[in-house]
Length: 303
Image (tube, rainbow, N blue to C red; front, side, top):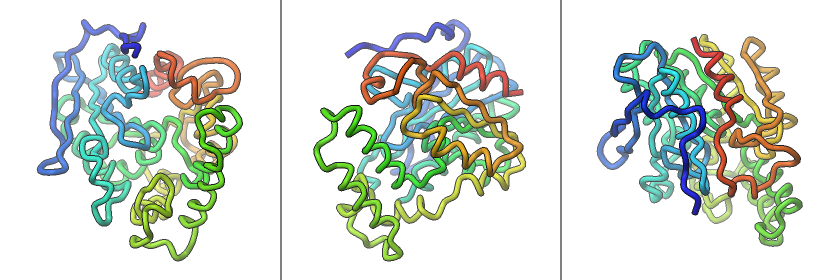
């Protein structure tokens, strides 16, 4: 496999990295603090997308959160990123009552508190499902100075999963077993059902995730939550993103957050990799770095 390389906009001589631990006991997770030797004016907590991602959001040969961390740190920003609990302990998904709240919020808030020791203001930058979770974290911790939502979905996740699978059946049929989109439709209908409960068998639900997890996702509205915040918000969207799209998800942010800064980077896909033509699953297997335009958009917006 191709090894990750330093992005052209990162200068490792400008910062150092330290291991940290967030949380305690069985749900403690490791993370990385990336910072210059002196206190920073701005700090950023990075949140990865849906799935059992490590702190770098490793996807094939790519590490988009490491790209961001090193890019931010090269600009003098302190950064903290961490392994998700579902990465360090995949079995946690089978624990009764485990939800997306448990997957993101406790460790993100712990990360904010650690980073406040190294930066005057701390922002939360979330990608994909991490972006969807960012308003929830800011609503729980009033010390959060602002949030950046990168490709955050507003369409219900079980609906977008059906749409994405249908897209992949057309663009990457070799990677999708026949009938998968139809299976997703049936499982999404179970999520939509008023009969969904914590006792609904996970085998009947999308991705084998338990009923409690889907109940929490179904009840959480990121736009409504974000609209109640009294902090600056930046929404970034890739124009070529087929997972979280300009047509399906961005209107929710536009309509619900009239005071937010919203920017579409036309050339970028879901991981904010630049390219041309329709984005496909194969894009993620090519070694790339987060687009400098995306990083610049955040740097220009931060104080």
